[in-house]
Image 1: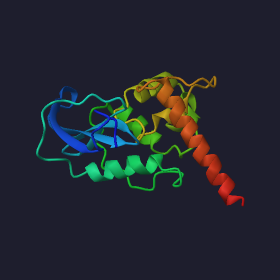
Image 2: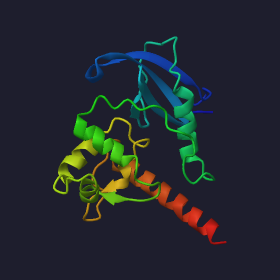
Image 3: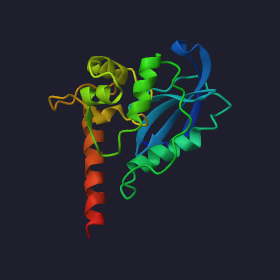
Image 4: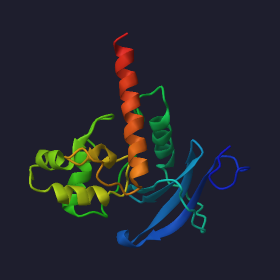
Length: 193
């Protein structure tokens, strides 16, 4: 059972129609329960455009048309949290990044190249993008990432070794980094046996 909304409700998906002002287009929003946690997702006609971390508050208008990308997002989230998979093997759904500026979109695409279980700094990412003096701008773009986790901005930390920031809060960033480190270490141990 999923405790997303009520301890007695089974885990389910519910779709909602909503309007995301910065995207100026109708979208479909749904709640997906994974491991007893409620994740909110928003889709545009072009793909997944926003992910909300638990606890996610439902909206009230139910849509009759769930997104065709819903099964891909559910599969990806389930795979991320499966201990035996080490990293999601499910393909990403189409990502709609149009809410960002061209620079933000470039940062978000660069984030997709950071391997599971690894970390990089804002400064290192800026340098890899050809803008070595843009560490703060990279950090700002990470903070505006509309699809954290699938676009792994949590893997970017401060050059000083601190966590930096995270739109879902530092507790979530710590949890994700620890989860990935444990999975990566477990994977390395299995390959050395």
